[in-house]
Length: 354
Image 1 (cartoon, one colour):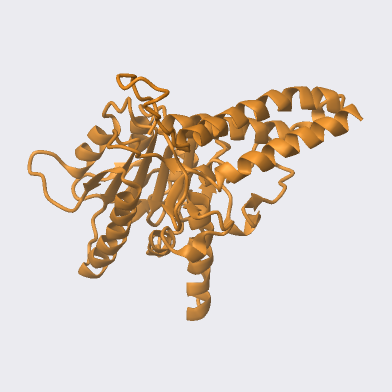
Image 2 (cartoon, rainbow, N blue to C red):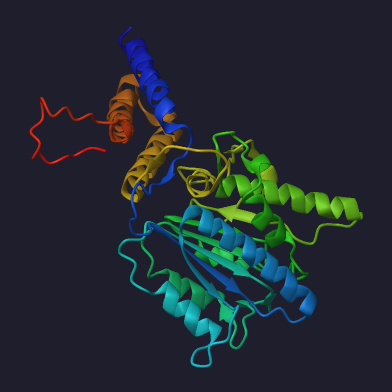
């Protein structure tokens, strides 16, 4: 009976604060504040004019997403800087101190190569190797999403996989070297309402990835051709990646070979790309706190069978649920209007609400 009461209590908390949550919430901008996320879009060497036009169109879509998110944006590869190569510009941007940044998005658009040992992203001037990118990204300690929209990008997923990161590659390995169309479908899906698979009013990176993979596969089927690219997603640091057909809805299908606590997909679903409807807003700090608690709760649920008794399990789950409830409670209180009555509140009192 005691356990049943706990189940009712925790379920009640979830139901109550789901009304406040309304899906995954994005960074708030009640008043002009410092940017909480940054997006770095790198356009590689096109080679042919046909590809240059395509890459430019993909880049424009990402720039529109950054404007929609009110995210700090840096674009490399559109103009020429005689003082520095594109590789130097990108490394400098990745290593820039970003104390007020809660998340970084790195989008690489272009062509890639693989010689059997080293994978490269083709830039104007010196190319970017997977080892160079890994070293530059090690300077970033906050959540990081790296989206590799180029051929032969599979090795980038394996090398960059780490805690607190979401890695997407357009191909499953370095030997898929034909021109990759995945970047086109991903940049388009990132703002399409039909990509909101859970209908929460927002499109997450996971939802955009799954939608883009399906559309990429459909493209080759319509052409009557075998697919020459198979995108992968990794966000649990196991360096293995997950194909879109290994998901059921937004959940990774059970994998008996996995040794990680959480399957791929959960962190990618916390990276919000686009809001399809008006949603409640929270600060970057609150979002970071909420995301960490959600992952802890999910990790605990994955380990439920390991506990000796249900009491032991709920003793660990309950404080996490309460902490999450407090986060949503603070969000709810922040939205409430405060009415000032001069008959009650002194005229010279400092106002603390809106």
